[in-house]
Image (cartoon, rainbow, N blue to C red; front, side, top):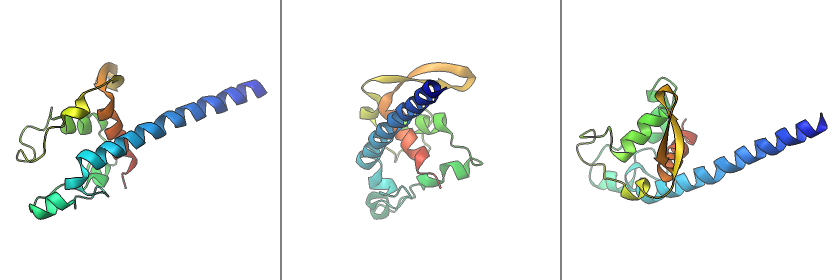
Length: 132
């Protein structure tokens, strides 16, 4: 019994430890690629959007705008440009570096596991973590 408890505690700590660096990496990418338009607080008030009179969306309300659910796959598709097309009037730039590097398996609709760029997944996890 005690061994099972210790194993469970260790496994839980490993899961939490894996999440923290991923969110930190996602925040670093957010700061580098997104904060200029969306603001350091992700509320759409970045200096570029203010200077150019753009309406960058408040990224802390993504879940609220989607009935309380964070649309993880849709967020990644918007960032990587797959579903973006002219969504932002071609204002939102391409993010090539977020699509480079190692991949991780992400379960998409229908249970399909798909290799997805790790920086893109980290950024989506960070955005999910700042929802209000």
